[in-house]
Length: 181
View 1 (cartoon, rainbow, N blue to C red):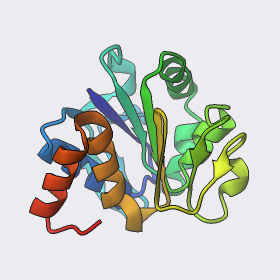
View 2: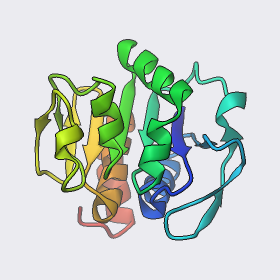
View 3: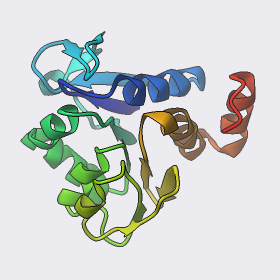
């Protein structure tokens, strides 16, 4: 199961493009609200209905946790102590973590990027504590996937599919979607 977390002010493209791509690959994804409300409004005023609330979800089957960026969405994700605990737990248990745009800073500030290559939106590099910064659009470093921003959201989604289902599935899906990324 993949869990993608929504906080008020999330970047809509960075959340919904990867979810769409994952679901097209027959990967089960749940949108999880960390706001206490099922309807979460993104940074561009688009309201999205989450599948579940954080406090009502059992994450024991989660093999990948995804953080979309956006402001103030990233700061709101960072401020959620139970999400921080879940990210640490999954990391310590070898499960996958993914973050795009400003959201890799959440992983960096938690010390989860130590010894990993990572990327993020320009000007957030200082928060990738312990990481080797890369300007690549998408970086896969063992069990951590990071990406630069809204313009890389589809590539990010295909990288998640590749990590979960293999390169062939990701490439076939990209071709079917007319994406040359």
